[in-house]
View 1 (cartoon, rainbow, N blue to C red):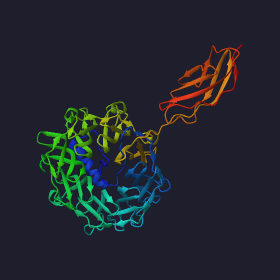
View 2 (view 1 turned 30 degrees about the horizontal axis):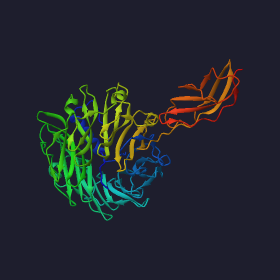
View 3 (view 1 turned 30 degrees about the vertical axis):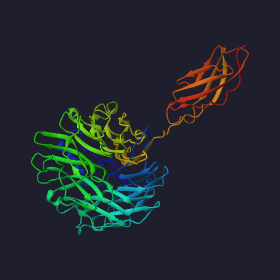
Length: 593
């Protein structure tokens, strides 16, 4: 299964912040979280319709408090697996998975309990090569407080036992090794990336993980990283694997002595990782230089696109892309159109998804000049990037106060979904609401708040955290919200090219009454409005088929009907999907003689 999914990192850094501060804040949070935060969504093809967001089914019986953000992977419409973490009754953090089959979620189940002696475990990543065959990976803590990586696999719809992965070296108390990103070509054959964090040295090094025929080898630090990052913190932003033996990763290292931030790329070719390298055109570590590689997407081995941000010399806060063709990387180039948006030199390309050569879509952020971070989207067609533009329709939602993109994923060229969060009160940086924006046949539609989150998000902190697209154009989304007690919960929503809305059912309880020479017809609304508001009603008399219409009221008055004729009446309801079947006939009324 080709991993073409967008970046899934919680970017909750403050919007009023310098580029250096915001990059450092986001990377530092990623270090602390160590992958516990992930999420899911699927992409669009023709018309896109979103279901109302729901909480993860089955978690209610397990959870005593907060639910941590999780991961998801969808293989086709209505077939997904999600995972994450929750706090149980004693207060321990436990890992869970939950499966959806043909549109029905089976209910969350705990995994890794047998390993998780110290009570801190989570699923960070999920990859499903086919329906009923998935691998989930994450971390757990032993009795000595050391955190180790583990994986658990699903075969034919049944989850096996969790498997601890051998450590790269002996761990001390407080040390952490974990898998944060995962790509599986088949069950038993996976590539992963994560990190080793040393409690004593306060450093972190990105690592690669490999499973072949069901056996996980000992993870290794990416070659060359100890030279680039001898005493700092390294972060993996994205893993993209077009085949079992070919992967690319992007990330950044932070030098803790001077807080210089340097982006890097690395590639696995024929199963062997090369030495990490800097994108061509970006200077290496030096005073004032800041660069990141925030997203990588590969549609074939040796054919990838990466992006991020860089600051050096007189160039400040530029969003860039860099492309690899036939195994050769070119030089970085500014993403067209961002300069015109970026009034305060604070731009970043944070997510990419590429489905064929020269066909990618991207999302990122810029500073609009009033110290507000705003989200943009852009599309590459046949190797040419259009001018980036603000997410369409965002202003009516946030009043230009701020928005932050988190994830993007495409099912085919020009058919993508991006998500994140926006500020909606115009006074402070909260509350935040979760948004989705769809690209259909190369055209970005207006953004929308995730349906259903307005009801769930009583604590006014919601976001989309991952988008995952299956090839058939189906969509699955994971995000988080807070309830009225400010406890965090996970939500799921999905999309389809088939509308979930229907024509309304027929109006009910239709009655007719002679009053002052006129006939007044009354009725009750349909029991099912089809999922969209009723726009109007039409009432028809029989005989003669005289019609009376009303937009809101549930009554209509007929005058001038032919005298000495017995009439009955039927009512139809209209919504955006069409007109309902007629109601049952009313009682018989004799018009005035």
